[in-house]
Image (cartoon, rainbow, N blue to C red; front, top):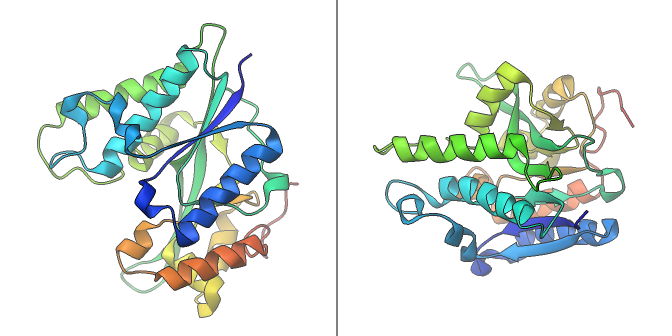
Length: 262
């Protein structure tokens, strides 16, 4: 069996500050596990046809969601890797000793999204995400779920000729819809930090961590910090840097109110 490969992508101009810390945490974990590591900049999009390149109709975020699948499929089929792990550039591995691969042939990440509703009350939504993906090849270099997911995503983007596709169109939205029907294998130890949860971890005392813990069945060892929170003005760069430090110190590994499964 070929080696395990950890794959990430980010424009070279953005690999600084807290985002660089996130990527270093992934590289460190890969090295600890004895896995190969590969980083792609805009080369990520080279695998896509002209019609699905980032442009007015398809944003870079959406194109990235498809490109990661096509790169993974190509790496498996060409036997360059026996299994591929994808991490978004803003995933921080803060408990590497407890981050191990799922047992099955494929897995998606766990999303417990905490936010305030219109009435101001916090609510948590248990979903799945594609900031962390794991695919293992069969004897023919294929993965049946990867093939289905990639082909479905490509078809949806090709047939959706109008604008207005949400950023999560073929990522968390599609995966959560599938998960609600067929219960996808989930990599429970790779979670996600919403702005409300980040603010509570940073000292806001807004109750988001307790809300999160009520839905969290497993402690997490890594999490997507959602750099879109900075772009949207929900969190500052300084807050993200502080959040990364707190997570590395164990702020989310085993939140109070949750029974540990380790």
